[in-house]
Amino acid sequence: MSAGQSRFGYVFVSGYTLLLVAFGLLPTLYALFLSFTRNGVFVGFDNFVRVFNDYRFLPAVGHVALYVVFWLISLIVLVVVLAIVVHGIRVRWLGDTARFLFYIPGAIAGASSVLLWLFVLDPSVSPVSALLRAMGYESLVNVVAVGNLPVVFTVIAFWAGAGGWIVIMYGALNNISADIMEAARIDGAGALQVAWHIQLPMLTKWISYMGIMSLAAGTQLFVEPKVLAQATKNVVPEDYSLNQLAYLYAFRQGDFSGSAAISVMLLVVALGLSTIFIFRGKLFERD
Image (cartoon, rainbow, N blue to C red; front, top):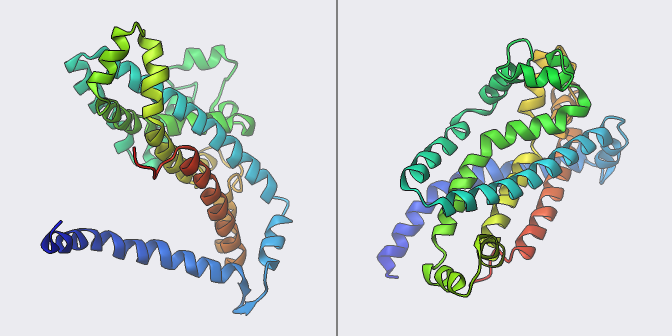
């Protein structure tokens, strides 16, 4: 690479770098400062202990953890399976049309997506009201009961985000050498054997990347419970998720140090779990 090409590369990444520093690194450093201080005075881990002992904290952790588990399992399993199926069909019009349709839900903003699902989940107006009533749900309040929320949020998130990942996985499958696939078929491997022994191992890095990005998004659960709480007159608790609890600390209680402590704990957990995905998926190893 020439010196001129290197300079152009720095120019192209400079915009992203500036935004990363302004809206990623600096806010993170400020949150770290707030989490270890109160009114400008260093208090060590006192803010973390105080937040941890809040009766709302552990239920919020459980809600987010259950949702993230459901979300990651459904995403990793169904996205990979659907991508392999679409790739295996090998029908040109289906591939192009399907890729376009997969992208549409992801183009809808998060709040708009939740509003759309409010109609789908309300048995009185839903196009699948017969199914909801057959499952024993007579009203929106019954559907969005607290015990059902991890599944409800998983369905909403999958509908909005899975399509884009299917397209990405489809592209990754296209990068697998045709010679390898042909050699496997000549050796007598069927579709399932090819998928399990060739395609899945060669998708490991992409699956890890999807897991990291989806984990980061899943732990930031806020819009969905917030909108549902307003639509159901607080049937969904306003402190359901950790992000909601942090919001309450900051803007209801005026405790920005406690809010920052929650944010830092979320960051540490997300980084720790992402590290597992990185090393288990060998994300940065060269083929």
